[in-house]
Every structure is written in C-alpha cells, then in structure tokens.
Length: 170
Ligand code: ADP
View (cartoon, rainbow, N blue to C red):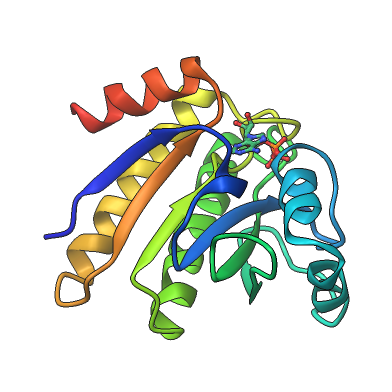
C-alpha cells in the first residue's frame, strides 16, 4: 500500500503531478497559500480559474500548473470552521481530501501534495484538521490500493509539521 509522506516548506516550490490549493469558493485567488500559488503560477492560472465558475465547499476542480513546478493544481474549498456543526465541518473537510484524490486519479495523476486545508484563515483547529486529513487519505489509499498514488502532506510551519509527524506515528 502507498505510504503518506510529510514535508515542511512552501508548496509553490514543490514538484508533483498536482499540488492542492486551499482555495475559496470564487476560485479567483485570495490570501495564504491560495495567493502564493496564484503569484507563483502566473496570470494564466487566474484566466483558467475564471472559466470554472467557482467551486462549492468540499468539492475540487483542476487546472494546469503553468509556471509552477507542479503539473496541475487541484483547487478545493475547505469549510470555514464553525460555519457548520463540528460534524459537518469534519465531513466537508474529509470531502475536500477525498474529492481531490478522486480528481487526481481521474486525470491519471500519481503524486499529489496537499496544503493543510482550512487551517489558516478558515480557522479549523490544526490537530483536528490533521486527524481528518490523515484518516481520509489513509481510507482512500486503502480503497484504491491497486492504484499507485504518492501522497504528501505539506506543512508551512514547524508546529504544523510536528502535528503531521504525530499523525504519521499513529
Ligand atoms: P484556508 O483559507 O483554507 O484556511 P490558508 O491559505 O489561510 O487557507 O491556510 C491553509 C494552510 O496553508 C495553513 O496551514 C497555512 O499555514 C498554509 N500555507 C500558507 N502559505 C503556504 C505556502 N506557501 N505553502 C504551503 N502552505 C502554506
């Protein structure tokens, strides 16, 4: 079975078939990792995003990576924490990871690096979000064991990396 890897750093510098952007519903860019991805990919990314007509919470859409080292960007919209019940937040966050992986597989991609969806401006507590992320990815890898998918979880800060390390050791 494929193993999950973890890495710390700026996701816009990382090479993979796809990186996953913590986007907002407009898909037209924003702050945090979204802003960094748009800045690094160049204006063609925004042009392609404009053709997608936004994205619902928990869903995912794919574009090319343009000037990024990654071939594709999967844009997923995490839940804004406490906008829903905690159970609904967890379900929506899990859907982000699952739908991103399904989309990557549908495009025959075999390596994917996730940013930590919803744990910045959207306020999802980091430990709870990491638990949902690892559980969902592990379940997906189990259910798709015949398909080779290399999954990396990217932490921007040291604290998040430590939380990922704790999840990996479980
Ligand atoms: P959201 O709106 O979904 O909360 P944010 O972009 O605010 O999205 O934050 C999501 C996560 O991305 C946070 O953990 C933040 O530290 C991280 N992050 C911010 N910039 C980068 C980057 N350049 N590379 C990787 N992760 C980043």
